Image 1 (cartoon, rainbow, N blue to C red):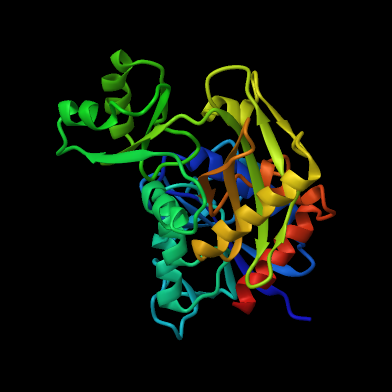
Image 2: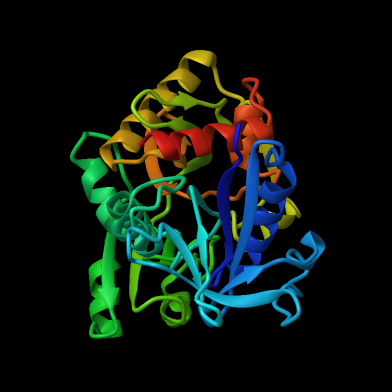
Length: 347
């Protein structure tokens, strides 16, 4: 059987550039080379697309972007090209499918997905509209709230809103509260605010990552997650739980687990884990997700399930939460990659 050309895209013009390099390396190492002809496309921090033909180990340590290994390319919007064009030689590179392993803005927010849809190139993961909705924490919450699933109380603000207006609007939220960039990931720009005196600094920090911010009430509970894989009839991995010693699950904790732990399966009764899975699936379908996503929720002491967010391209190393939850029900990392490519091509 002829091998299919799979373009794995990594890097990206995003604050989560470094996270993408780690995730992509795991995908490259675990994809079945006997089935796929792997084509590597790196996007620099400045947003330039480059075909990469160097050592894999140069990707995680961010030394991949060297002239002897790369050449500039672009995705052709002419559907008959169905792939890349090398800018120097105008040579075409046919792609059967694209596997975006990008996190955050300009990769997970629907922009790249829209470009691929315009070019009629199949790809792995959620479509452009779903990706954009899930990236916008406020819009995602409002849509999910309409299905009678609980969400945190929140307000959104832009640079046009004075700090006095922000203070006035959030005064009825019980502290601690969370100040977040509206469309950032990996906990970049997020501050847990314990008292009002910390609020202005947190707002200023969040604006460094987005022109719109969201301020949410804190939830007295712990975070649980569901890995979902599929289009019309998705499967759901085992529910995990985040155990925190203090603070919140910020960037350092997510990628280093300094004082926190990921408990799998979550230490709650099977009946409750089933209820969490059902809620996650309802959220996944409400937001139009396809391919894969990780749905994060809070579980409170009085057994309420409260929606937090959806990651449409979750962390994807072999030890990340998403593959770990699916491993618990029998899927290897290579199986997951295989299934995702199949789902992308069948859509």
